[in-house]
Length: 145
Image (cartoon, rainbow, N blue to C red; front, side, top):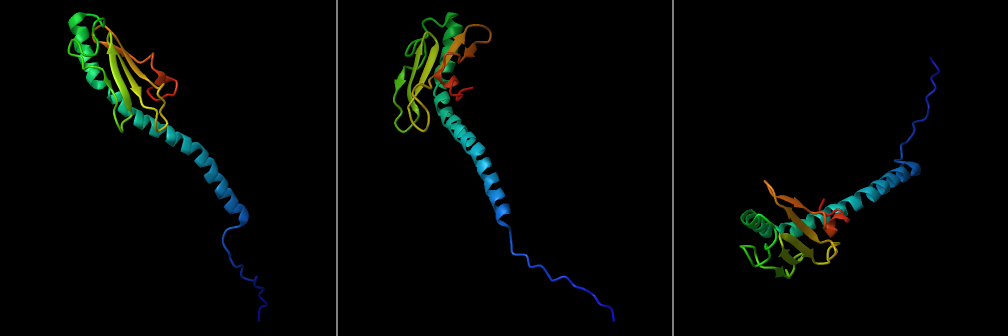
């Protein structure tokens, strides 16, 4: 008869402490990167309401500039441009105003959006009319880029 040596069966008892610590560390690193990016995404998504508030005035200013060949005189409440509006209870828009074709939308300070994150659209006459957001406060916070 042969003499066979059997090694004792090793009982697996789950993960070691080091393996568990590595998993926790990896999850922590991912969370440190993902959570701020997600918060910025939410701010941009909410800021879309501020941008959308300019749409009615934008199309009216385009018609006014086409008619007058200049932005001068294209003010809120004149030449077919909607009157300046303030207040939007429950919303993110504090005011929408138009002066010489320049549309300014001021957000309410809430949900991570500051009142200084203004959205300004400046028309440049031409064919077609070009819009610029260069004077906007939202550029610094990257909400309207």
